Image (cartoon, rainbow, N blue to C red; front, top):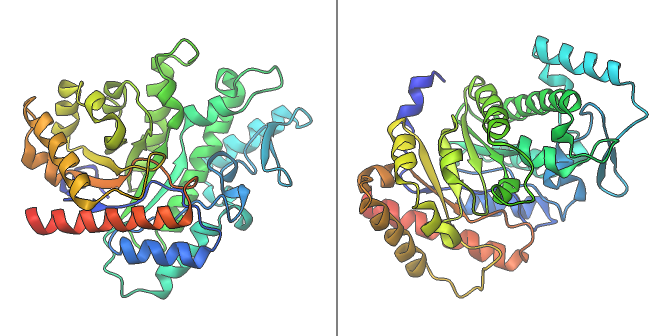
Length: 354
């Protein structure tokens, strides 16, 4: 996919998933996705199927300096490893582009492999694109500590090596997804950025944008659309200034705060960016939500941004719909209701406007 081709990406209210589902039954999760999002399926992370599928653990096996304790589903910095050997190995793989050295092991990828298998067996689906996800560098770097008790992101040598491993793992994910089709979206999940600006957040702006852009550009070079997802509130101007093709935000809970950045948003849209509106609540889901309530909330958001000089037509053309966050902590019943609402909302808006 050439860079200019991204100008043609007009989702027009198509819906896709953020990542996780609460299902332990892989075929049931895959069938749900195909039924509600037949044009835009995603592969699910299924932490209740296996805790090895949780966001951070899933990508960790084999990364330099790290060890996964599979019995506990924990990742830690392994001081017994030969540091020089770890560096040499990952940089050699990275420089040769050897993504096949960084596959996600089968035990960590039930949802990914299940969805790939399902889509290959059901080629009648009207597939437009296939969406996946990987934990972002900032969230990952803040979730683990090195042998000195510091967040790994502040260990420059170790973290740069880990970053190269994450890039190779992302390349492998993309290659695996492209066995289904060439049109692929990969979201970089950065829930850790919801702490940006607080007294307890220890990563500077240059590191955030630098590491994010490093990952974004790496994946764009593989010919995919790249999104950044943050399920809390953050400095949205920071993410809108990155090189991401898609920004996914919690439109249910933080629409008013997101709308505080009209200049950055206009600049993002002027370079053909897409907004993924997380319009169906997850942690706040009650089961009483209706398509009408969700549609009205979305329309209010469009009007609010239009009043600030942003084209409503562009907003509609460049709109993906998602839940506000992953659904791994919801009940299966509630998650399936939420997916149904999202699907019905998408279908109604596409019929109305397109």
